[in-house]
Image 1 (cartoon, rainbow, N blue to C red):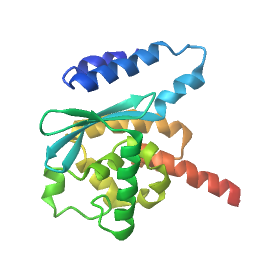
Image 2: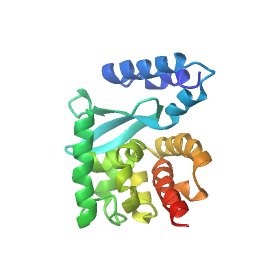
Image 3: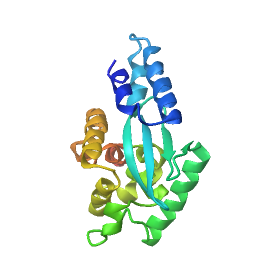
Image 4: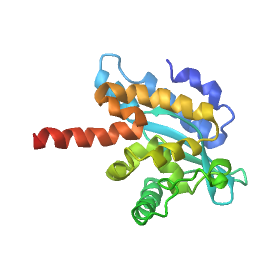
Length: 204
């Protein structure tokens, strides 16, 4: 199973991360092969590990497709925390307000701001930059879809270029089959394009 072979990649995640990765991988084994719709669920969620790189600054360390969206936060002091749905929703709601008033690093031109590239962004910004943002923040996708600054800042939200590349390959290829070619922005683009294509059909 392709998810199982990733277990070795996350051996250094720590207690919570390793336990949840094992649990999610185990769920894959329990999915009957004759039920493709159940397997399809694995393409619609993300397991994300976000690491605090400086006080109040975060970057995406790893992420991969999963059956259920989970976010593990690794803090500077070495502790780990699983974010609850309420915590994630609150962070995204707060970030949506910042996007509206133009103070979010996600939509700013940060080419001359080395702090974003080197240390990262706020936790809410980092969540929305991750693949999980497509699920948790789909309702604000129209504000980000097609925004070039957002695309550039997404890359800066990952701890390494290889992590960003692996994520794009994992999530982009899975969403490309059900969305238009405009979904090159990745998982987030796929989600927002689904809504736009629906409105296009309804509007003629």
